[in-house]
Figure 1 (cartoon, rainbow, N blue to C red):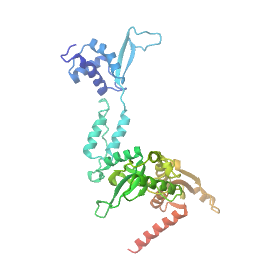
Figure 2: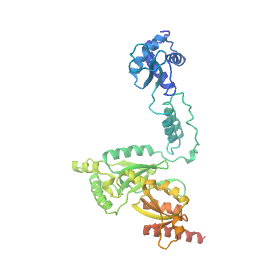
Figure 3: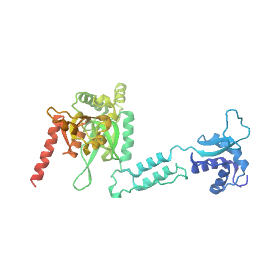
Figure 4: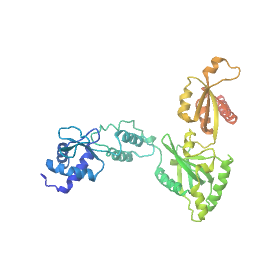
Amino acid sequence: MLSDKPQKMTIPYIIDVLRRYTDESHTFTQTEIRKKLEAVHGLKVDRKTVSRNIKDVMLYDDNIRCRICKRNGEELTDDDDDTGVIYTDFYYEHLFSDVELQAMIYNVIFAKHIAAHNKTEIINKLESLSPMTSSHSMRNYIRRDSEQLKECSQLFYNMEELDKAFKEKRVVEFRYAYYKEDMKLHVEDRIRCVFPLGIAEKNNDFYLIGLVCGGKEQSARETINDIKVLIEDAERGTRRISTFRIDRIRDLRVTENEDLSEKEKKLAREMTLKSFSNEWQNIIDYVNQNGSLSSGRLITAKFRTEAGSEAISDAIDYFGKANIHIIPENRPGAAEDDAKKNLLFIVKTNDAAMLEFAKLHAGKLTLLEPDYLRDELAAVFKTAYESISAN
């Protein structure tokens, strides 16, 4: 040893140097480790000290990797023994690659619900997981104006409380907030009672997916009885699954199950999305087939659009490839050229999502089915026309 620092620090310092300055593409020889120990930690060690400790380092931290070869640099063969071999090209195998870290950092950067000072702290933590050999270009991004950040002081509290409700299969009670003409959020007076089924994300907003039980305070047993009725309603198609923006939820409370029998508690734990509606097999199907994450019921919709229309790409992005079937439209009596130009889209989706998409692409598509949605779309445009004409 050439340093006054205690020998027991050699192994931790070697691990620290490899973790901070190496990866699979940037390795250190034993000589480079010695130089970095002195430069970073002021620890002067000789060649024998590094060589003696290097095997212990690899036993101490199984993320340390190296290349074992002959002294002349040739690779070992199966016939070679341990005599005359050297350990070189040491590096630390990191938990995340730079690409993975960059993806996580961008998610933090563009998150609407994280304050600027918290973003900086989280990004610094994520960047510390990457070796300093990386070209830290992870902060090349367009800043969002602070005024455009979401008002979401309770978001993380709500997420934590909802996690408890999911684990215990409990009903939650809350009030919901809406924007009004003064551009401020106003909390409604009524209490909503919801059985949570899952959480989904759309455009960096988080949504609670659940089934509305009632709008009043009630005991857990009354809630379970209410849910039994809701299951029957859902199976008959008379009740819809609802969605709520989690950052708009206020005064969230998870109900207790203390007054339930063991049989009722078991029923609550076994409740799933499939229990409530045979339309949605699981939460993934619901999210994939509900482009707008709005409350509604599952439908098979049909609409016509021209080949080459911008609506084609938008429809695939909005509804997802797995939920769309596209065929040439062969209408009775239609000319052959028209059949080639017009395409028929058969889409499995949520009725509210289909209505929203049809309104956005009016003039580019013709909604064909279902009939009630055609009537609703026509009523929307009739009202809009009358409103414009009157002014």
